[in-house]
Image (tube, rainbow, N blue to C red):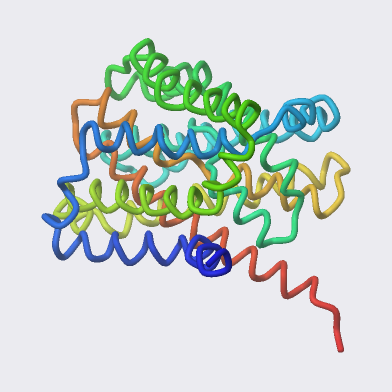
Amino acid sequence: MARALTQLTNAFPLWIIVLSAIALLQPGWFTWFSGPWITWGLAVIMLGMGLTLTLEDFRGVTRMSKAVALGFVAQFTLMPLLAWSIGKLFALDPPFAVGLILVGCCPGGTASNVVTYLARANVCLSVVMTMCSTLAAVFMTPLLTAWLAGKLVPVDAWGMFKTTLQVVVAPVLIGAWLNHRAPALVRRTRLALPLLSVIVIALICASVIGSSASAVKTAALPLLGAVFALHAGGFALGYLAARVTGWDIVTARTVSIEVGMQNSGLGTALARAHFAHPFTAVPCAIAAVAHSIIGSLLAGYWRLRDRPTP
């Protein structure tokens, strides 16, 4: 059972691709998963992340402070600026450009921890980085989005702050507290939680793509190109930043994955809650597909490179 659950979880790029493709053809199958469903679904994902955290993980911030700081700075400088630049370069319509910026301003996604494991990088460092960027997102995501996208559309930074606090930070802290207070109960549920998170993310992406299917088809090439360029750039710049600053290959892989993979579920929830145009959420949904594909391919490549020669 444990092996089957793990295999289903590790296939998360396939889940997202298949459900998103079906949503383009049969939008009605997934558009019901909207509004409060997305908000509560994201909260469940963040609760699951919190349940994997221990006091030792929080203490790990001090032991790995320099590497964590590098990932944090890269996450909230390289990605937002890259998203803004790519939106300009691809001449995206304002709703799509704002959505791309929103993705770039989001913290690291929980899927980065899975990809880090598959890539044989530093899982503990990945978890700590994700935790730090997630907790900081309550301030950083609204502020950066307002700064970079405020000239395109009105940005409700205070509303985004409250939403991020409610659906991200609070569930993570509650999950960590439960893990500390009832570890035996948490251990019994931990195997199923990553798969549940993958299913919820896939449903969120399919819902957004289904509700904007015509727009996605119309703007397919430039929009897909922009989103893939954002994440490919994030993976590359994250790796380069780590190597230039003297870190080893394993740490560089970890930073690369953490910077290249965003919490697109959070971006979708914020776009739906605080931006009037429905197309703003579309880049967030496509981002989940893009960073999953790139991350999985990179993980496979790195695993092959590490395989001992016969």
